[in-house]
Length: 100
Image (cartoon, rainbow, N blue to C red; front, side):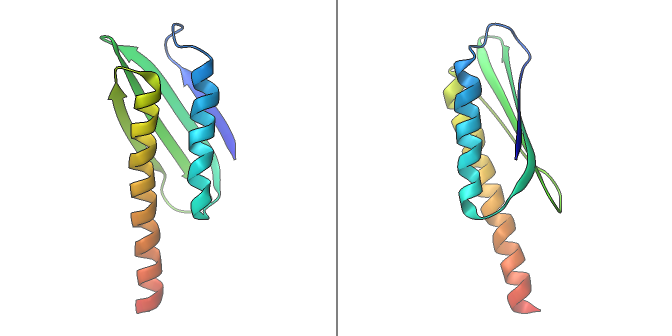
């Protein structure tokens, strides 16, 4: 998977880039391979905004947003939302196979 971590503000430390890549890699443990992932970090009004977009080989992209006072917390919140979306999507696929 290709990882793109984009900082819209220069005051975000580079250490968050490695942290974001590690957290997004963790999602692949559920068995799905993604073409690429985009992590967009921005600071607005003292809060860190995080947007994560995962592009699978087939199907629609998964998108999650979160904001927090700390950059790591924003990344963690967005990853949790993505995991929920991914598990729900996987559940729907397996239910359709059993039904069909």
